[in-house]
Image 1 (cartoon, rainbow over the protein chains, first blue to last red):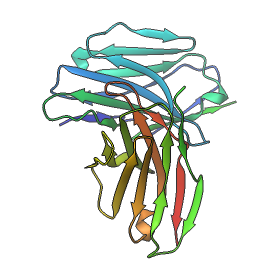
Image 2: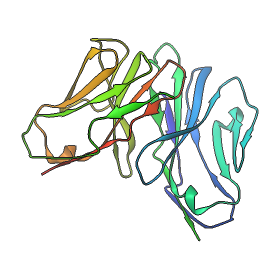
Image 3: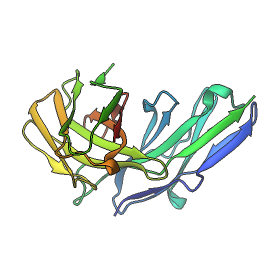
Length: 117
Length: 111
């Protein structure tokens, strides 16, 4: 079975601090995709990144960076120099392609990040 | 950019009413999905569809049905609304293997 676990329910930091959101996934398939989404107070889920299982290269996009490690089944997300506008709920998600899968996106429980001024 | 439009942002319905939540996407995606989001439970898949007139149950289909008569439109139906169906409902569309694009959500309150 596929599963995504975000152990951190809520995180609170002060502006300009760095913060890492953890994501651990489970799948028996060799081909899969991992995602991060941001959900600001407005409610819409905003796509941040997609990573396939064959590409373990870490990625940086401005203040955002992602660390994908297959050895520990983790796909962690770091925000450097956090800002108040980063306050949101962040979801990690998995699409796993195998004989038992139909391409469904499986979400973690979400981590609520609060950045205080 | 793909756009997914949900017809209502906020909806209040009475217990026992039949409720329709509409979702339209404009990028010719094959796949469409309905999730509900509840605090502490994350997003849970209700139903999905890979083609017109095709539907499959997700993880929590009880009390819901869906309709996909046209490729761009995927409707979620609450046959007889109950208070435990008060939730945020999110529609999404995608191509296989790619990230989903979500609508803005419908916050449904059943009183």
